[in-house]
Image 1 (tube, rainbow, N blue to C red):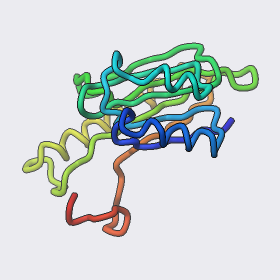
Image 2: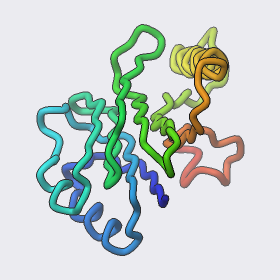
Image 3: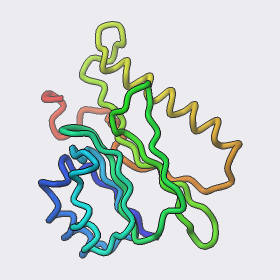
Image 4: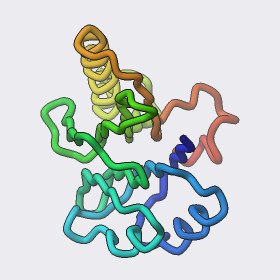
Length: 170
């Protein structure tokens, strides 16, 4: 199974690029982050025309949002909110992979801002809380499932200046 993940920064603005990428790479599953699109405005028809009949969306108007597009049917879809916020940052899809369940987690983790101190930077505190809750959920669910799990997405992890296109602008 070929899975592609992409922080698309607006799916509606880049739908033609999605089509080109899908044609070139021929993925079975595409995971998008930062779709910036509410569920009812998602370009599902265009996605379906590309051969992705199964679409799971956790969208928010104007920012955030994740979507999983698949040629493989979903057995189940779960939208999971973190830090008591409904901000479109995670969707889980369960797919059948060779007769066994595959749990695919598509994340858009919050950016932490430029000051790594939760006392003076609320965004950094939110990111740490999000990651802690994420870790806790995965640890608890590990005992509940035998499914293989894959985690993809934009994790907003850039430990060094050269890991981002322009660290001074972040």
